[in-house]
Image 1 (cartoon, helix red, strand yellow):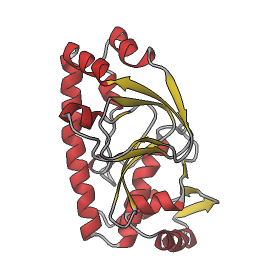
Image 2 (cartoon, rainbow, N blue to C red):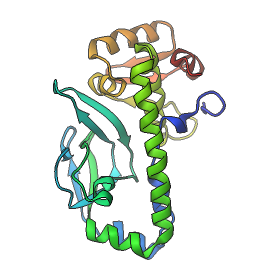
Image 3 (tube, rainbow, N blue to C red):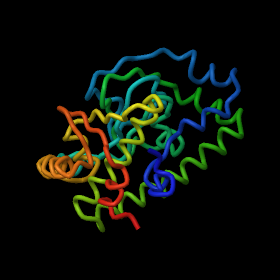
Image 4 (cartoon, rainbow, N blue to C red):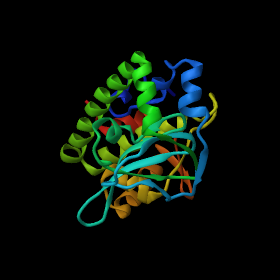
Length: 235
């Protein structure tokens, strides 16, 4: 079921896929197609916070989490990037070190794009630059909204919102008319919601007993998205 009219997913989620759609075939080939691919195993790091950037990354397959690590060593996942998205461009554009880290949430195929190539296309395609600027502006508002979640919402509300957001990521790769199955570790889900793993397990059990979700192993699916939205207490 679509979230249209019941939950403003755009306030909680963003994507860079549409940015690349404005490139000509020639520019897309230069930026993406001619680059080699590298396979990453689940948990393997693409880049770490504080590293000096030498380029950006394009995801051909799989999901990549961007995260920060607090003083206690706990991850806070701030974004999950899907197939067809770019990551790592903030640091290249600002000419600063990476502000966060990125790691594969599942087996991934990724291309590394040297910053010289990225900047070349950025200068050659003004529309690409405009789309990127628009995406950055929207991304800032989403991250600001996420910060308010951790300070103003209950644990169940945070978990419900995280499930809704990650479900949309998996929905993009699910055939229409088939069940959207979220394949995520409880640790990653906890790090998305800013909760302990134990709390997430307990609340998932509660949602399952109410029939709102179903689960098998680490896989989760939503049976009643309207009820999950109600548990998010979005207003």
